[in-house]
Amino acid sequence: MVNRFQYNTRVSCSLIVSLILRLARGGLVAALLVAAAGWAVERYRFGSTDAEAAAQVETEVRRRFDAGADALGAIASRAAAASDAIAAAPRDTAAVSRLFDAVDA
View 1: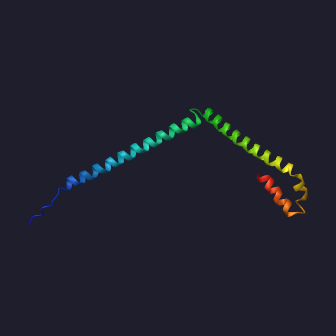
View 2 (view 1 turned 90 degrees about the vertical axis):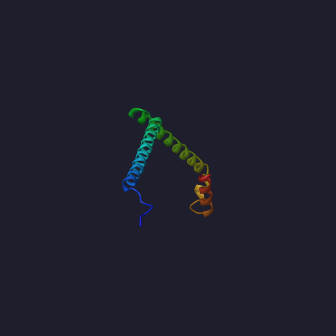
View 3 (view 1 turned 60 degrees about the vertical axis):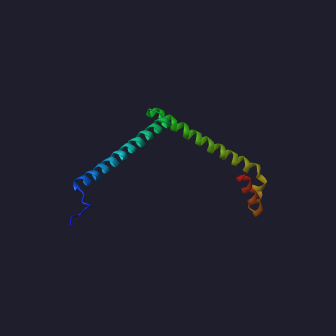
């Protein structure tokens, strides 16, 4: 009896190798595209030289530091405005609550 569904193993191996190579090439192209996009975003965000990157980082750190200092100043001014609550805090738990409410506002 002859098997009607015989296939050539050389052809099927060649198809498998071809498929693996196509997948590998596709993965390589995708990795190169991601690397190029990452490089472009980094260059756009930080600049093209180390000096530009350092200046950009310094600007960002100063901006965040200034924002934190402003927030701390606002909290301190609200706490200073609630001086009666500060004076009453050691004796009155309601005054402590009002003081924290004033600072959190």
